[in-house]
Length: 374
Ligand code: COA
Image 1 (cartoon, helix red, strand yellow):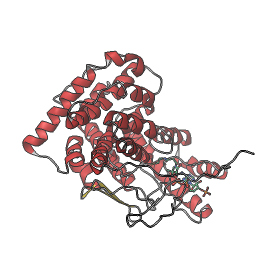
Image 2: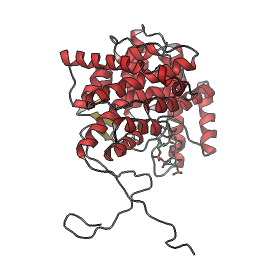
Image 3: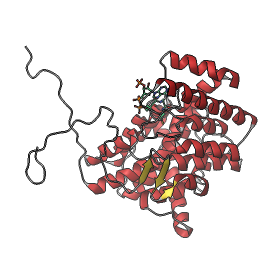
């Protein structure tokens, strides 16, 4: 192995979890893990979440601009038409979409798509299909038929409609839209890294998105919100938070919705979603769930501070994502598929950027086995 000036280069060992290792230059997303700031193409996500639709977020992620006027309308129409195109495939994918796990169903259904001849159309199709297939899976799980899309609606409203949940409550639709915008992009989270690795080999975006879905499923990544809701419901009341959290940490178990690889502060997305819940869709139930989530944060933070010398463990986005998705009417089994509905947009932005870089991602491992078998 040699450097550009021909001098032999010794491989350096990266930490096992690749923390603090930079593997790409990007113009898409910046995270300041110390100050707790998340920026997408120069825009603070806290602002995007309350001012932009998912469609405009897609435009920003894929093409670098917050589209307006005719361009915005064209993007909305293109996504609507792509939802119709995806829905036309649902009957063929019935077996895949009737599986018990939403992420497995999504992976199996998306894998049956073909990339379009045009890159932009492929992005529309994959983004639309993720929502259409996630909703169709939920309908089958509910024992009902899939609901065809309404291409005139915004993506968030149509997704909620296709799941069979009431979509006339503008506040709930706005809260879901804010969720989709907030969750669409988060730099090299494991699923996005997986997407970039696949694209770096020259493979296609369908394969990359399928890999993203596989990575997102894990409880250390996108699989956390359902267990978060289980935890909040199991605790049940503010008075039980302290003993529950104490017992859990004493048993050496993790508190879901706490901790993050990058943030040393509270995850800024937790604050965004908490504010959306409090201001947009507050109800007796959401007030109770948010109050318990807040108390879990405080107690867990204190307990973990006492035990951890090296790492600050604070709330991550999933603590409030779980509450928001519950409040808009989605069942916990649909939480991670709904996360995929959001982050497919970011994956495809990274796929485009990685393809343009033309660089194969290929690290080394350090061999620790024998060189000869005795
Ligand atoms: N509850 C209790 N302890 C936690 C914790 C949590 N949620 N998250 C991390 N820790 C502890 C670990 O036990 C470890 O302690 P140790 O050094 O004594 O073994 C230490 O903090 C460092 O943890 P580590 O696993 O190295 O951190 P990471 O950066 O690899 O993990 C997560 C990040 C998100 C995977 C981790 O915080 C976690 O599992 N959180 C719960 C799941 C979750 O909410 N996932 C959604 C992420 S957005």
